[in-house]
Length: 280
Image (cartoon, rainbow, N blue to C red; front, side, top):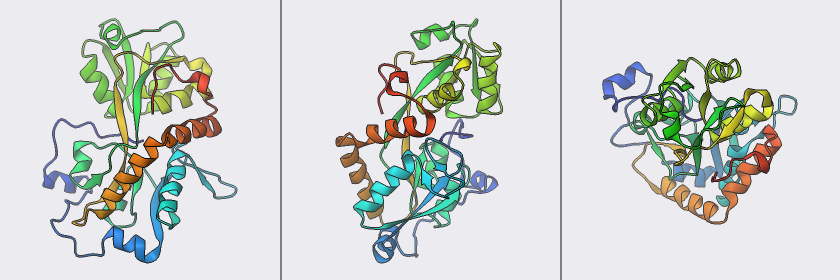
C-alpha cells in the first residue's frame, strides 16, 4: 500500500533525500547484478508486510505468508526456477531495503516522483481504482458531484488518496486526518460524507464493518497503479525480465484471478461486492 506519505509538489533534490533517510542512486554499480545473483543462487528475495491483508498476511501460528503479493511472488519465482526468500519489512522501509540490496524486488509500490529518484519500477502489475467509502444514504455517481463545498470528504493526509481528491475535487471540504482508520471513523460517525480509498482497501473495510457505509465507484474512473520496485543498477536485465513476466501474467487473466481470490479468502469480499466497472 502502497501510497502513504508520498504526496509531494515536486521531485526532491538529492540533499533532501538524505533528510528522509534515502540515498541518491549511484551512476555505476560495482556489485553483482540482481539478475546474476538470482541465477547464481536460484533464490528470489522479496519483502513482505505483516498485517496488510489482502496484500500480505502472515499466519501467526504457522508463520506462513499469504496474500496476493505473495502469490504473485511465487509465480515469478517459479518462472525463474528459484525458491522464495521472504523478509519481513514495512511499507516505509521497503525502499531502503531495496537500496541496501536486502531484496531483489518489492511487490506493491506506487511509482511516485520521490521514489523514482532512488529506486526503479516495473510496468504496472494492476490498476487500483479510487472509490468513495460513502455513508449509507449518500451515493454520488460522478466525481463532479463531489466537487461541492457542501460535501465533506475524509482522507489520510499525505496519501495518494489525498493527492487525487485535492486535484479532482478542489471545491469540496477535504478533512485530512493522520490515519486511514481515522478517516473511516469520520464517515462512520457522520463527520464526513465519504472517504477516498483505493478499491482493495475500501472493500476490505466494508467487509469487516458493513455499518461504515458502502463503496461507490464514481465516474470517470480515477486509478493509481500497483508496481514492483527494484534497486537501481546499471544492468537492466532483471527489470526487463519482470516486465515481460507481468505482460504474460496479465494477458492470461491471472492478475484478476489472484486479486479476487485473495480478497475473498483473506478479507471476505465476494465478487458481488465489487462495484460494477471495476477492473484489475
